[in-house]
Amino acid sequence: MLLDGENAVVSHREIRGRGLAADAELRLMDSEQPMVVVVIDAHHLVRLGMRTVLDGMSDMAGKIVVLEADGVEDAERVVAARGGEVNLCIIDPGTPGNDARAGLAAVVGAWPATPVVQYSVLCSTQAVRDAFQGGAMGFIPKSMASRLIPHALRLVLDGGRYIPVEILDAIRPNDLVRSSEPRRHGSLGPGAALGHLDPQKLNLCLTARQLEVLKLMGDGLSNKEISRCLNISVGTAKNHVAAILQLLGVANRASAVGLLYGAGIPGGDRNE
View (cartoon, rainbow, N blue to C red):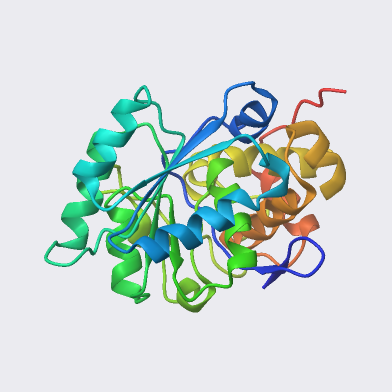
């Protein structure tokens, strides 16, 4: 488990996939245009609870527009009425009488460039697999403490993926590959041999954002310095570093950097 913020605990693993551009969160914060989030759930009280969480995200206060809908068709109507732009979609696709996979597919089809987070009562290994293979960028169980939800959403907005801690150990990278994407190798596993890593395999194992963070680690930057270079929060930088260590199967930053240079990949470019 990872400490992110003063008293919040967040666990996750990031796998390659769709998402906003790497600096999406910063651009949304700096832009005069608000971030538009659509929350789709059959139950009004659930939508109200998520609206409260979104309204309380202090680093985006006053710049979030929350649209509520009780189903995908309703969501399409309310989004179209506001101009058609959506920056994030949060959905419980398992509405009464509907198949969860079909509901998720409808949302992904409606807004293919928008990151989608599934918000669900059911938090099983298969449910998480179905969500990510269907195109979701995050999976948040409804039992999750509300104070932790903003951390998961920030991770998704930064181009990563969020997986709940109770499912993390049961999930493998190939479980999370969208059905239209090529299969991936998965984590390198413990004891990966330093100096004998194919660069292509490293690219398959890490997202582009994670590789960027790893290169900055190779330059000797701390989490705080990485956050400044990439215009992300220190907590998000810590999460990226922890995910990199997990996916490379190593215990510390030095071993991860050894794999980077063993693959013949130079360090990152610092914009200072």
